[in-house]
Amino acid sequence: MEEDKLRIFKRWLQQAQRDLDAAAVLQKNDAYEWATFLAHQAAERALKAYLYYNDETAVFGHSIRSLVLKCSSRAAPFEAVADVGKLDDFYTAPRFPDSFAEDVPAYAVTPEQAEVALELARKAVDLVNKLAPGEG
Image (tube, rainbow, N blue to C red; front, side, top):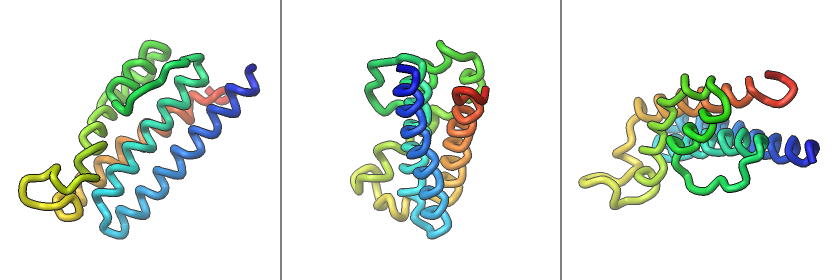
């Protein structure tokens, strides 16, 4: 059972890191809308990795705020990264042309927003890595 949990944890965290790396590449190539969305995905997957490892069986939805709250109920260090919940702003808007009044996401999402999104996602991924089984 413990081996299964560890395997699931590692798979989710591995994909979270891959998403974070891809977000950085997209940011460098001025694809800010996709960088912010993948930053959200990286944080979501990292937080879900932590919850799955800690016996959470019903991890539904995509709200980073909700996931951070669930993680905080299991480990106090997550309280320090509550601001990661701001990534929820980048879940839907960067993907849909009607999310912005005048522009499409490709031109509405700014380099500054992408930078903030990557920093927030990095905080979540780094914390889950720090609390990883056998390393915390």
